[in-house]
Structure formats: structure tokens, C-alpha cells
Image 1 (tube, rainbow, N blue to C red):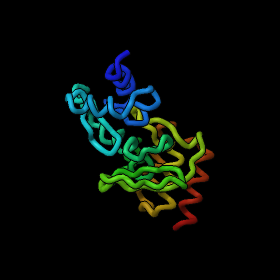
Image 2: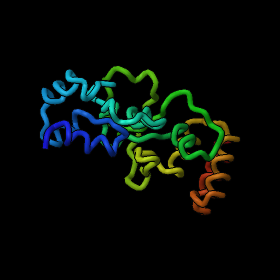
Image 3: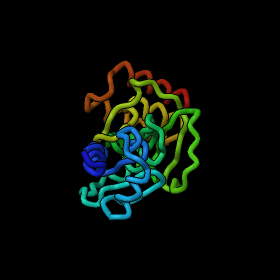
Image 4: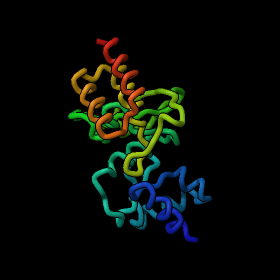
Length: 183
């Protein structure tokens, strides 16, 4: 299989994006990736992140790009961005909120549109939203309680999450108590 075809297979699951880490995992050299970029088969969109221009750019592509930009395999959308993604409240984040491992330090340029939080998340705290790693709704609400998101937005998230059946009753009560303690 040619390098371009192998990377394309990965890009299909990542909104048209691939990383140098993906290439390494497939046994594709950085030089081969650079050559694909020179030929216009892929375009560099961030440090170590490339995009296939022939892949249709959807509205969620910037979120996948943000997660891949971190270079952390456990990075995910979080906080305000996760609440907005799940459409459980009227929050409108100004930046894409991401969570990476506590010990992960990002030294890449291009992060001006992102807010990076450091937290070691358990496997059951990370889920998926539109094929993009995203904290679960329960985790997003907890993070937003801790980060000071306005109470009315969090009450809205609790109510809508519960009504949609995405927030178990026990978790809703626990988070509501945590919100009241904060207030």
C-alpha cells in the first residue's frame, strides 16, 4: 500500500486529518509526508498535522484539528466546548477547550484559538462526539462547575441532559449538589 493510501485510510476516521504520529505508526517516514505535502496531496495545517484537501471539510473539522494539534493521544474536547457540542445549554465558548494529561506540556505554535486544561481523565470520562474524542457529559458538567461557568447555564445542562436521557438521575443529583455547594 502506498503512503498516501495508508494515510487516507486514517484520515477517513479523523475528518480528513493525519498526523506525523499516524505516519510513524504506519511505518511512513517524515520525508514521505513532506513529499506528499510538496506535491499538494496533503497540506500542513498545524505543527505535525496535515489535511487531505480532497476530503470535504465539515463544520466539525476544526475540533478534530484542535485535538490532533495537541499531539496527545488522550486529548479530547472538554469544558465549555463539550457542553456546546452536546447541545445541552446555551453556552457559546470563545475558544476550543481541550483537556490533555496533567504531565503533558505543549510547545507547539498555533494554539491561540484553544484553551488547554491539564487533567488525568479516566477511560470512562472520555467518550465520542461526531467521531471526535470528547469528555462525557457528566465530566463536562463537573469541569464547568469547577471552572466557574455561570450557574444558570449549568442548571440548563443538568435539566436538558436529564430530559434527553443522557444524564443518569444519580449523577444529576450529585452534580446538582456540587453546583449548589459552589454557589
